[in-house]
Amino acid sequence: MSSSDRPPASTGPRRLRLMVVDDSAYNRRNIADIFAGNPDVEVVGRAADGEEALRLATTLKPDVITLDLEMPRMDGFTFLRILMTRQPTPVIVVSSYSQKENVFKALELGALDFVAKSDRTISPDSTEVRQAILEKVLLVRNLRPAAVEGLARPGARRQTSPNVGPLGGGELATPPPLPAVVRPALGPSIARPRQLVAIACSTGGPSALLEVVGRLPTNSTASFAIAQHMPDKFTRTFAERLGRRGTIRVTEAQDGDVLAAGSGFVCPGRQCMEVVSIAGELKLRVGSATPTDRYVPSADRLFKSAAAAAGSRLIAVILTGMGDDGTEGAKAVREAGGIVIAEAQETAVVYGMPGAAVRAGVVNEVLPLPQIAERLAKLV
Image (spheres, rainbow, N blue to C red):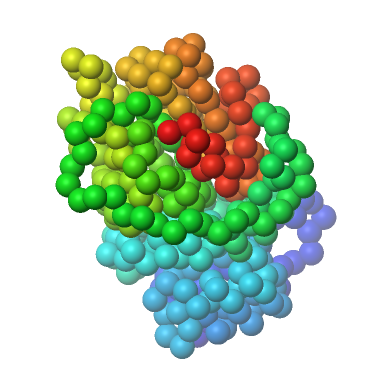
């Protein structure tokens, strides 16, 4: 049986109102228990399927929802589509490792982020999973109202007017549709890249990257190295999805990979990636994180190494994400003569990473997401 509860009256700052949606009563109870006694989050409703969740969401108007994807009567995908049309709300998907493709489909439908679990149940002993759910729910406090509305339009982010300068601003308009995808010729490219594009992102990054990659031109002269904060076992599937969306060949990075024109590499989860120059050739070094890495994968390590290896040929891009990963690395990019582009607050789901770089004064250009793709297309 599912249940819902009205929040008690409060005289202090309003807590985040959380709704738990899962067909397992065991999971609903254990997710709710994560927030028992938490001063910042209040579980206001629980639902066993998408139909019940829609009814409760309309009545309770939660600030955030945790969502299972596989449910009877109405699954998580149908629920997401309807919810984002009627009442855009931050949604954290809680899914098993075996449902990798489903997770990315949910992100494209507007889910904010996801938590991976090893099996269908979330037991009280699942410390890592419980901590991840707690952190991602609390992340919602950092979202702007406009960012929540933007979740309803993944792949069609709002765009500022064409006369926006380096400092951003301007009126919002609907971006043009994605260009038709022309697949590159099969077989490995041996052309050395004229430019290296290093991209860093975290929360909101998967949808942002899909848009950027989908707008890149055919026969790009650049190679792309991507540090997306994501659990291991998901990065390979995500890289394959990026490769299907755009015109560059994208794979999960392996130690020793050669950066060739028209190629892209996603850093594996729980590892860090660096760029090195050997006999004029750019290669990747992929390995374990060090005690000094505050984030894994580390955008700072990627940017610093790429600056040393590629110099003025480097374009560093900082997209949506929590924290300040990439700011220190961006300083090295500027010092090496490279270009740093940060996503504008208007389109960033979470402005933490790009905002930190802007405040540090290490950014050349601040652009909304669709214009970042257009700018890269011209640069490469």
